[in-house]
Structure formats: C-alpha cells, structure tokens
Image 1 (tube, helix red, strand yellow):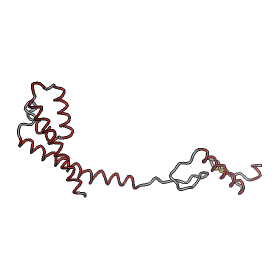
Image 2 (spheres, rainbow, N blue to C red; image 1 turned 30 degrees about the vertical axis):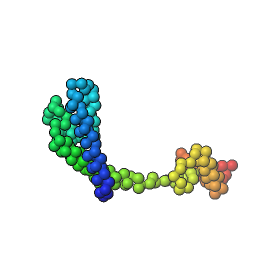
Image 3 (cartoon, helix red, strand yellow; image 1 turned 30 degrees about the horizontal axis):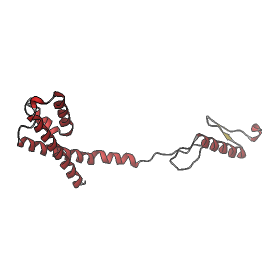
Image 4 (cartoon, rainbow, N blue to C red; image 1 turned 135 degrees about the vertical axis):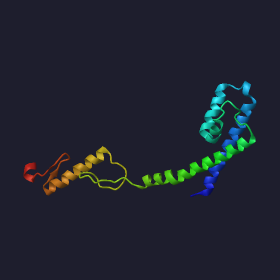
Amino acid sequence: MKKPRTLRFAAAGSFIALLLAIAGRRIDAAVPAIHLDQQVFYNWLALVLSPASFLLRSTNPDGPIVPSAAFAAVTITLNALWYATAHHVYLLVVKPANAMVSATEPAWIAIPGSSSSSSPRRSSPSERLADRYKHRLSTEQTGTITDDSNSVALSESHSR
C-alpha cells in the first residue's frame, strides 16, 4: 500500500472541502441576491465532491451552508477521511482485479489451414486464404485434402 499517495488523496479531499466551505460562506453572505440555480449547482458539487458537507447539512437544508468554523473543520476532516478511504478501497479491490484481468493473455488456438504464428495480430483474409491454399497443396501431395467445413479424405486418384 502506498501511504504517501493515500495521504495526497486525503489532502486533496480536505482542500476540496475547504474550497467548498469558502464558496458556501460566500453564498451565505449573498443569500438574497443569489439565484436558485447557483445554489442547486453548489449542492450538486457538494454532493459529488464533498459528501460529508452535503450529509451534515441534510438535517437543515434551508439553513446556512457553512454555519460555523467548527462545521467547516468537521467537514474538512470527514472529507479527507472519505477520500483516503476511497483510495484505500481502490488499492485493495479495484487495482488487483484490474491486474488479474490484464495479466491473462488470450489463448491463441491453432486452426488447421491457418498460420500458426504466435503473434497477437490477426491475419488478414488474404493471408488466411494463402495459408489455407498452402495447407491444401501440402495435403494434396500427401494424398489427403482437408476441407474447412468437414474433413474429407480423398485419394490422389479421385482428385485427378
């Protein structure tokens, strides 16, 4: 686990909460002159970026956005913990799951009549056709022909 990165996420969460607290304080100061759509935009930002401040205000939604400095301090602390926890859960759950998925390579199955190269690039239709033709020519020389839909063994006398 990378603790410095988790601490950076916690610091980012506290900084975002601080910015939203400052913006909320300015909105509180201009309440009669502020438009409703700006308050709704602020609420959506708080809900997405700082869920602690949104949840703490849910008991009194018509009250001031930032009622006191203690409210701002609690919001900043809870938001920092929220961001650190989200990053920690990411490191424990999502990152190992993504590593397991990317570690597995697709299984390349050798199909008779196609090239057996181990390159992950799919061959073009013309390359596949050329491979099939080569395979048919080589099997004609041995006395059997394999068809793509079903395997049919023909003797050289039947093919001539």
